[in-house]
Amino acid sequence: MKISLKAARVNANLTQKEVAERMNISKNTLVNWEKGRTMIDDTPLMVLSEIYSVDIENLFLG
View 1: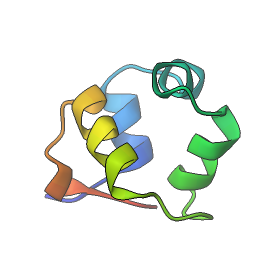
View 2 (view 1 turned 30 degrees about the vertical axis):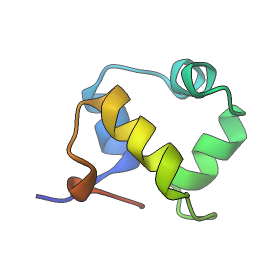
View 3 (view 1 turned 90 degrees about the horizontal axis):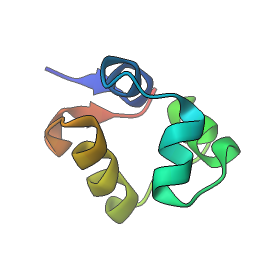
């Protein structure tokens, strides 16, 4: 089952600010990934899958 980055974050009970701080990125970068405005590289996607406890194959943008 595919899940959006935003849905995965919300399901993990995390705010955008919390995730951005954990990843050492700006909140705006995360917002752009969640809205599909910018593409996300493989490494940050793997980190997000770990933070959200979601299999990387189930994550997609937007």
